[in-house]
Length: 273
Image 1 (cartoon, rainbow, N blue to C red):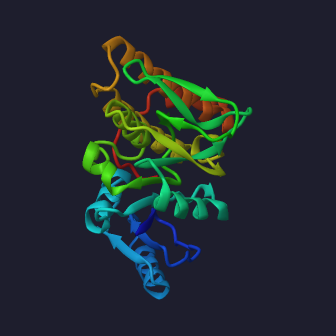
Image 2: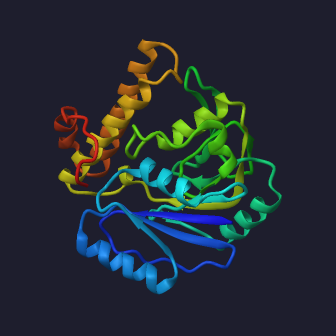
Image 3: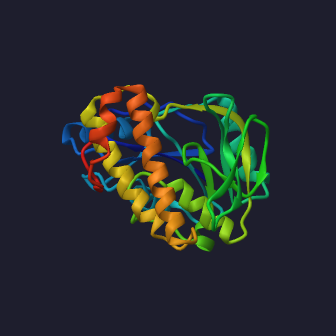
């Protein structure tokens, strides 16, 4: 069975019904009770599974909740994201791969700006050395991609464990890809090019950006404290490099004057977005 998971947060869901090969699950992280009630009714009316613990527990805990409750041996989990434009080809490819694929997980091909694509090729996990791609061609091996439209076999989690619940929203995909690579588990791309709308590359209020950055700082600190990447100085450098990148993007797409106050934003987990 293929479970298709969408994690909702403080918005009313509107999902396209998929075929009988897919079981659609909504995990509702909404903190607004009225929205949760509407989403629960929507799922009941449309035959979707609905789960919530009535608060925002972050992405990894939501993913793991569904994995532990629903996935059995032979099942698959496809993780969706509201910010992704999904083609019909994606679902036909997912259906094919779960029946005849050779890998334990698959990553989608995403087109970014400046002729760059994802996923990237992992060259050396210990140094966080990756090779960017400049085309949307099929790839296989040790890859680094985002969780949106990723596809995981239940067998993968038995081998490397579940998603890291110390993280809240960011670095979740990097962590799982690096752990799989360290375990010698290769992956492959899903032959369907998709488009992702990243928060950091769109206009938002200063409050929204500040709160989003606080989570990114928290998750970056958690991730770079791990033993995955070697060397304390390298970890410090990579952390500050990532945060500077986010601050630059937020300032570039919104207001350059934000760059200075954003540098002093505190790292916090589970802030209101």
